[in-house]
Length: 378
Image 1 (spheres, rainbow, N blue to C red):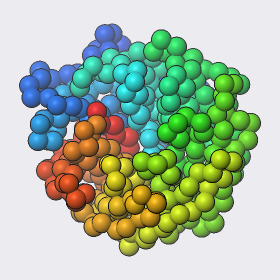
Image 2: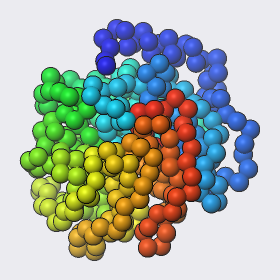
Image 3: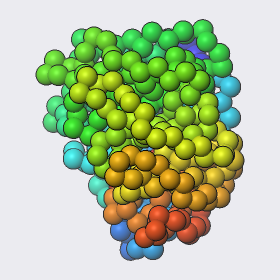
């Protein structure tokens, strides 16, 4: 479900004009609730008629209360073949804690919106072209920002953060070389982009498009012209995070597994451990200390796994969620986990116990967010 460039641009302008009155100061439709906030959670709706970020304040016990709805000035999008995961990606809403900024993709209008974060309030600062077709993810390290575009064969486009605004660097564009005609789109487009913890490399998963994990070296002049490619035949590598020692922890949707990889000095990956979740559509993953939690969209569950000091994975229990579990994030203090449930467009709230088990706290329904993806917790 994609539009032509002209119609997308016109639609994006229409959305921006329509929102101008309420967003002149970037404050959105905020409620008066301000008491008891101990953090915030932001959720992207991916609305095809107008994308928005819904803000929630987090109480001391981890429960969420809606505090505002902020239009992005762009449009959401839907990849062909998708159901509960319209972007089929991880990291479409990215919190830049160091700069106090929130980046959200507008897949239907090929743009990225930059919000300033003030507690549980947002101020829209900028809407910029993504440098490609159908943006689905954003990676941040220091002043470097890279956007992952899913269609047209896939690409990454680099930007520099200059005093809180994104400046596109034309020379920092790299094609991923995927087949633009491969179907269905939601399985044959790239899954995630993120920097390694030290910022020395940029990692991209290609899902079934190529069944590879691509690692681009990062230097003063941006990323290298070509990545170091690690083939993962049949694995369909999707979402990923990093453990405490910088190893890559990846969901493998093709085998419904989670695997750890050591990143070599030459940026080649060596598999360390792999554990099957026993669930369906294992695609997203988030880390909290020594545990990771994989979202299983087809089962409506979260799979917990312990990550050993040597990178070995051990299953640590399965927790039920609402239907269509997709993207998830953990509060900055590590006490709470929030998982999006794409079928109803909700967020399930969990307390993370000392042993890594999860205790359900409740859930909220996000306005107009069925099938939406993108969540970020402070």
